[in-house]
Amino acid sequence: MKLRTRSSRLARVGAAVAVLTWAGWAQAGVPIADDPVRHWRVSSGVNFTSGDYGLDDDTDILYVPITVRYDHEPFILKLTVPYIRIEGPGGVVAGTDGSVIVDEESVGTETNAGLGDVVLSGSYVHYPDGGSSWPILELTGKVKFPTADEDQFLGTGKFDYTLQADVSKNIGRFLAFTTLGYRFLGDPSGSKLNDVFFASLGGGVRVVKDVQVGLVYDYGEASSSSSSDSHEFVPYFSWKLADRYRLSGYAVAGVSRGAADWGSGVSLGLDF
Image (tube, rainbow, N blue to C red; front, side, top):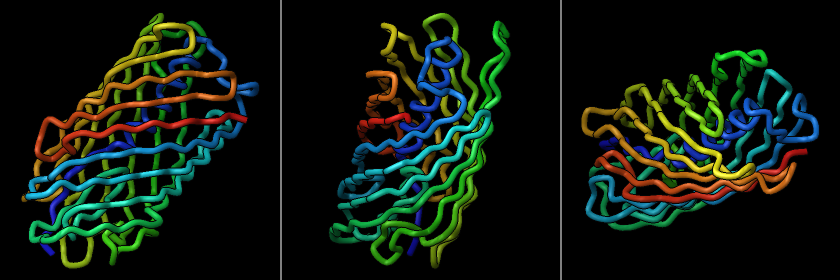
């Protein structure tokens, strides 16, 4: 197989929006849960992306994660178990956090579905003292376990490792944030992938007390010489329905060959 990577990081962008929105509310002094120091969160959602990734036909990917998160300030532990469905040219493979690996020699159309790759992450969050002008800093390490069926092209069959830093700053009703990260990719059978750098830059505004809207620019480095970098714009909203519930949604518009043409997602989280 001659593989190349196309990236549509719907899952990662959605998670980043949820985390950074929560951080912005926390910095603004808005309570998120009854016990902000130690609590659990369970969330799920539906993510969909579509694009041709340089092939003749489109590939549609449905990604439905269930995420369990435990916060014990200043640490966060998170486990994601997803269902994934891929419809498109045979040989399109799901990578880490919504990325896509494409066999350039793919022909025909296949539909495969099942368990995706399980992802475990741990984070340390530094909250500045009250009144401080410093931003919130979150450092994350992540491991992707190869639980998806490689033979059905639902995953690469290899471990991936990610190091990531998120910085956010709330200024009144406004929130600015950025992400920098590096992903160490395992090589699928018969191919060689390069490790990749990724980054996001975004901002949001709290239009009313419990609703935030914003826009994210997302960049992903190509993981092979035959692929292109990914550039995407992601408008989003996040709505804290009550003390324990939060609804988030977003769309994706790809502006390069390395990105999905379009996508969207919605998630609902429960704190307890």
